[in-house]
Image 1: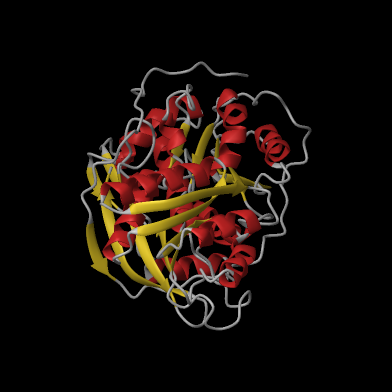
Image 2: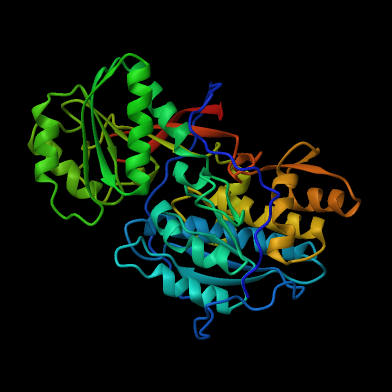
Length: 433
């Protein structure tokens, strides 16, 4: 059944970012592209246009994350983050006295579109919250289906500013632990300018992710006194990028910002062929294409390339916990954010004393800020059961949410590629939006 909308969330459109940026050095590990998980949605029930009755006493987590497609390398750490949280919550007694249930599905990357049918499977399995999707465009394609069924959608990786527009989420059931690209765009622009680059070309995917992040980077570069010589957008399902690369080369930039997914493996050789590759000038990546390319390019190809992606430093303790869940992990990006998304839902449901998502949704913001600080599910849930207001600080860093369900402060990592085509951390920048 379709649940009524709630008026508890104040409408707020995130138009600009007021950034207070601080940096700290780190020697954090590098990541790598993992193989896609082979599991399918665990429910084989027929798709349903409406969710089953909520509040059945069992918190059911649906994981709509990439097992296939250009973002499949993000799937293993995200699934591992979800599973780690569920295992630890259940070891502590579960939620509302019962173990948390999980059902898995493949979000793909939008080409071809499989997320809709996979979402139907999650709803038919009576999911209370859908963790995902990873890609902003995929999440936008299913948000009405999920929230229209009275189910919470909680992404660990969506960064498009579109989700802070009240028109996108009129039911007030969308949340995320990844910060808006307003912040990543500002940090990347600052990095470009700090490197002394002032004649920059931007090459980006033409979708909700690429276009909006490109706009934020462009805004930041111009505000800092730099020039964007050209901004080229290519179709998200393109297989050839010759025209766009030729236009980038024609303006003779001193840097290129590449906002892409796995098509990076096709674009980089074309940039090199036109004399605007990593050995010719400074190249910058973003979260969508920051991965281990040691098996994709000859040694030295990406040496010096810089990259940004959201997320606090991955601690060795949490790394071990994720590896216990999946010993084959080599990539950890968005694993912490996935973990925190599950923990916050468990805490909110406990606070509301129900797994009905439309009832406990407002408590997701409550558990994220302003109360007694706590940093683990065991610690936080004990406080909640005593009736205390809590401020959960997660493994991904502070998760203080604003009225639109997005983080109001977050950390962006700045990385650099070595001759092995793997990336290592240079520093972390914390910003307040």
